[in-house]
Image (cartoon, rainbow, N blue to C red; front, side, top):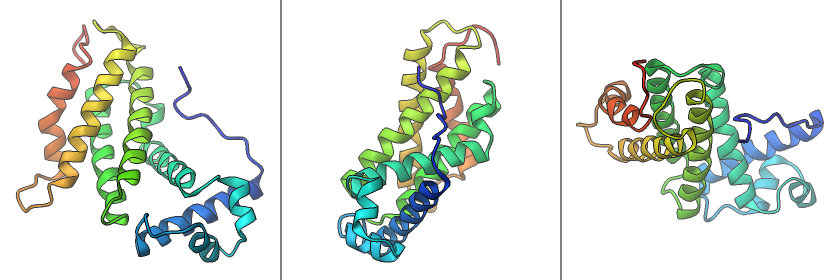
Length: 195
């Protein structure tokens, strides 16, 4: 299994350049939408040349992938979920984190493009799956950890996406929604002991 949060050993200048490109990308996408954003727009906003961009990313899709992966990783780290052990409270916190991340990211790319949604889904589900697998490998479960964590990652992502798309006044708060769906999601894990 891959580490949930592999550390990139990068030169500080490389990190700064990637952060600059990522921030410029976020601003351009918020302004123009993903489809209309070009590499030229991103490099102009960042104040770097196109060669610098291509030294870091082959295209805007790779930058999107990187940006979503890094953004979600930072949310997990900020809430310290990457260093926790499994508990129902931590699972609930993960559900809330995913709901808020999807809603926030979607608001920056309005209307969301199919490419954006596909990258978001892929990156977020991978990280959820890896984190949950790491958690449940340390507790007794009736199901295979890889299968249970994969099913759980799909359930969390799908339910979070539904919550983020439901923008009417009847949408419950993210905390109430997490309480509603927690038993459904926990059922995927088939834990032998109460948590």
